[in-house]
Image (tube, rainbow, N blue to C red; front, side, top):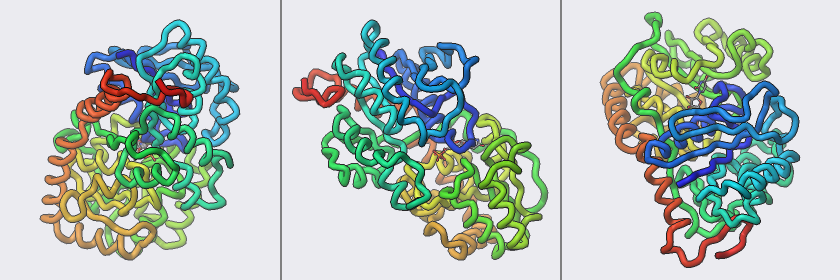
Length: 407
Ligand code: UDP
């Protein structure tokens, strides 16, 4: 198949850890590569956010990244990109006039808008993965949600017009049904992990004698790093390493890093908290292996790739019992659950894990086996391909085409 992926704000070529660069970037890049390894040709269309980017970049064998001119060629926060989606769609439409793919896979709601609009006249089926939903974000972030006000309405429309929707966890299925998206068109395919890179064996980042708690992610309030800092007050003699955010040299200019450092200082644990800033993705396995436990306690989480990266490295995970974590972290078997935003509960789990190394060993081994079996990208690509096949296969007598037209 010729597969065109649309990922308006999240380029597989971007550095990770910044406010808008995380799981989606990893997902799109890794899925594209794994699909190419199954013999498909994949082109990823992403917005040009710098003037000096080449139009086209070979990413891997069978995968090309195309930089689309849509709005100013500079970084723009994703919540301000909606006005440029019509231009993005027009460029896709022009491209598809001469080289229509067999299928379009859009990532995030705005990519879905551009894909459906751009494909309207070409009859190309669009598969949609949302990665995050406006309804969930609004529920948790309330007035702090900076999404465009029309997001939820347009997002629901995208879901209804797409030929199929891929939900990355079972929790998302209920949210999609509340949007009025027909359940028969929704398929659950989780995100994956590079099990060659993230594995128990391999180099380990140097560390001191103190047990190490590690958290990794974009530095945004909903990731709950403040909960971990609060919990640290009740777990003696351990260090917390916070990986993610901008470059280490720029942390002092990052509002969330400044807030978290102040909190650590106020709670008297600043001497035990290390902020590394953004860590290159290829350096993460060694850092994860250096940890006794990886903590991921967001308020909500559409999927959460970090917990499965830790699991794949055989390191026990404590994760908030939300969203994708409900599928990936099997409480008491491959990790431990905690309610979100409850530092006392988190401290209790951490003390239990750190005082009983046998428990950590057991959870880590089960986690590594589960990650290797369930989450390799090769398996995720096969499951994604099965959704594409359903959408374009001859067995379907009624397929919802781009733009809502029916074949
Ligand atoms: N990541 C990274 N370096 C960093 C911070 C994050 O490589 O400094 C990667 C991390 O390994 C994971 C992704 O960014 O693959 C974050 O994905 P996740 O699903 O956990 O969170 P999201 O960013 O989607 O909210």
